[in-house]
Length: 182
Image (cartoon, rainbow, N blue to C red; front, top):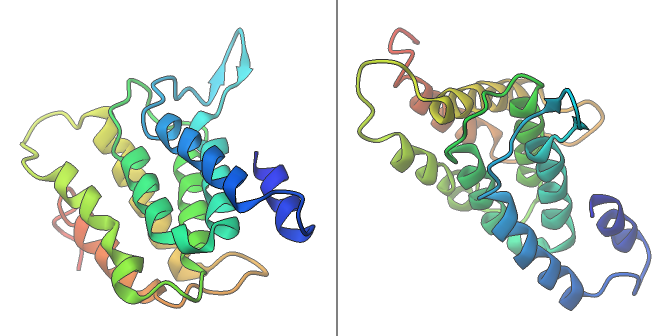
């Protein structure tokens, strides 16, 4: 999907807006609810639904330029989705890279660039002492990775216009489990 959208962005008429919208509707329904989030499975090999889905999300945001805020919210729903599988194959970094790429869009305003983190905040509300649920661990890992991506940037790519504001908001959320952060 990512390759088709990227090729469609570079070749006039290859992918229509209507086709991309239809694909995005199906993709968004799947990406936020997929339960098998294994990175690697011994019998089936690479599954990587989160990582490959994150790549596709960034491609959709690039092709459907007016959907950036929607795609960021979709990534937040994926980030906070209930899961039985802890990210162990850098899924958090792939999701953070996708979010960083989506945030590179020059037409996102500050509110759109940070607003999607409300989904994360709401998901984390009501957390109690005790073992960290797998989905919360994955969420915190992704927020940490996102903060690093925003602080360092992605090699040979533009820095997101609102990187500082998004990083500050991510740090606020990371203070929930890491209360000792300055």
